[in-house]
Length: 436
Ligand code: UDX
Ligand code: UDX
Image (tube, rainbow, N blue to C red):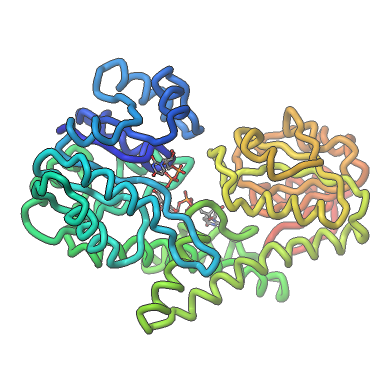
C-alpha cells in the first residue's frame, strides 16, 4: 500500500520504516528541512537499536523516502498518518497546535478520498476535532475518513515492538476505512481491535497510566521494603508470578520519565477533570513518582553528608536504557539536583551524551563508564543500561575516594558489588554491611 507519515520523530520514523519493511511504499514527511536533508543523506537523527539498518535497506529497495512536503506525501499515498508531537501545557492539558496545523495542511492539499490516521497520543474526542478541521479547510471537498491508531512502541525496543505488536488498535467512525487499515497491519500478524474513535484514544491514555501506576505501586512497595527489611526484587517476583498481575513494569527504581508517561499521566488527569470524573488515583501515582527521586537523594545525602564540592559519578543520562532520549529523564533531574547542592558531577551515557549537554552545564562528560569513577566519592546508576553491569567493578573501586554505589535502577548484583568492598545502596533492597 502507499502510505505517508507526517512527523519523522521517534514514533513517525520507526513506524514508517517498519511499514516499509513489511512491503508498503512509505513517504516520511517532516517540516524540519534539516532533518529531512539528513535522512535523505542516510544520517539517522535518533538512536534506536536496529533502526539504521532497516532505514538503509528500505531506502535502497525504493520503499522508503523522505520529504518536507505534505502535498507530495498526501498526493502519493492512500493513507496519511499523523505522528507529530502533542506536548504538555503548564496546566497539564495537551497542546494540540501541531495536530491542528497538520490537519489544516492536509485539508488544503486533499486531492481525493484519503484515510487520515492519528498516531500521536491525543485526548479523547480529538478525532472529532480533526475531522471537523479537515472538512472546514478542505479546498477540494474530497471525501475522507479519520481513524485513531495509537502507537504503543517503547523507545529502545521500538522496532521489535512495532514488528511484533501485542495488539493493534484501530478506532473508526464508519466501516469504510476498516478493510484498508486491516490490510496495512495484516503482515504484522497481531490481533486487531476495531473500536470507535473515542475508545481508541482512551485506550492509549488508560494503558500508559496503568503502566505508570504499576511502577509507582512497586516503588511505594519498595519504600515499605526499606522500612521493614524486606526485598523488593523478591516481592515483585512473587507478585508478578500471578498471571493476573504480571512481572513486567514492576521494576523499582528512580521512577518513570521520558516523553510519554509524565505527560500522558498529566494529560489523563486533566482530561478526566474536564469530563467531570477526576482521576485522583493518578495524582497519587505522580506524587509517588516525584518522591522517589527525593527519597533516593536523601540516601546519598545521609551517606556523604554535605554534598557541596563532593565528586559524584553518574552512570546514565537517558530516561531508560537503549535510547539516546533524555526528554524528562529522571537521570538528568538527579544530576541537576546534585549540582544544585554543589556536588561536582562526572557523567557518562552510552548514547545520551550529546542530547544531555545543554541540560548539564558544568558537568564533566566522560568518555567511558570507567572514567566516571575517577576521584568519585560515590557512583550512582541512574539509567538501566545493561552494559553498566559488566564494567570492571572490582578494579574500579581503587579509582574512587570512597566506594559508595547508589543503584537507582536495581541494575547490579548487590551481593557481588558488596563482595568487591563497595557500600551498596539500592531501591527497596535490604541494607547490609560490606563484606571485608
Ligand atoms: C510522538 C507522538 O507523536 C506523540 O504524540 C507521542 O505522545 C509521543 O511520541 P515523537 O515521535 O516522540 O512524538 O516526537 P518527536 O521525536 O519530537 O518527532 C516529531 C516530529 O514531527 C519532529 O521530527 C518534528 O520536526 C515533526 N513535526 C512537528 C512536523 O513534521 N510537523 C509539525 O507541525 C510539527
Ligand atoms: C511508554 C510505553 O511503555 C509505550 O507503550 C508507549 O507507546 C510510550 O510510553 P517508553 O516511554 O518509550 O514507552 O518506555 P518504557 O519502557 O515504558 O519506560 C518508561 C519509563 O518507566 C522509563 O523511565 C523507565 O525507566 C521506567 N520504568 C519502566 C520503571 O521505572 N520500571 C519499570 O518496571 C518499567
